[in-house]
Image 1 (cartoon, rainbow, N blue to C red):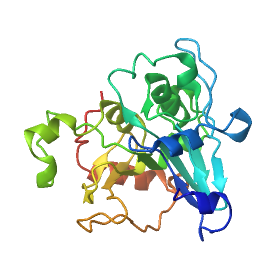
Image 2 (cartoon, helix red, strand yellow):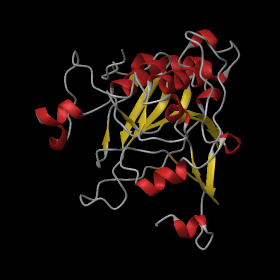
Image 3 (spheres, rainbow, N blue to C red):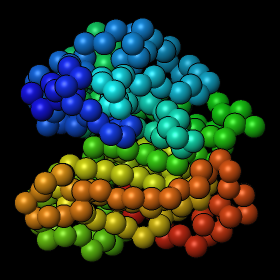
Length: 261
């Protein structure tokens, strides 16, 4: 219901706005995101043969209303000169390796993702250097990675100074996705933005395979604790940065605290 005035054109969003989906997406919103067909850029893909490699391709965005677009289930897209990788939904131990059926896997949106989605995203965001052409900007990685979930922390590293709400043994068991951990191990992103825990939290830059990543968790808009839900940046596209600058960033960053296996 909150979206209806914008979908019907009675209200306007003043600036281009892009979003991904999470676990809490309501039933009506989920059906809306799943209505599009392949010609509208709903994010459908053809099943790949085992071990087949494909050339990285940008995703197609689903425009819902003027200045309002759903990025899709997973992929990479260029927005305002920035390369943006994204993964919608949450990790499900039940569905990750065994989706309920192939048609569900192909639909534009479900609240879960599977290993095929992860493989496609790694291929399309430069996570597999073997299929990235030597002259491709993806050799340097992407500018932004958007996920609903945090990555899973690596047990071998000391626990970062987490907020009290995430420091209990019970919270640690459910904090982070192993699949998102694999993403940050494969995708060299300058910035990684996550949601899902309704708080604002940052980490010092950590090393990825090319340069360094800055991690930001953002709270929900209008959250009760008045945690930050927005962050403004002036970002130089990684594709235009000098190799020497990227090497310096890599050298000066800390070790990756997430489980990237």
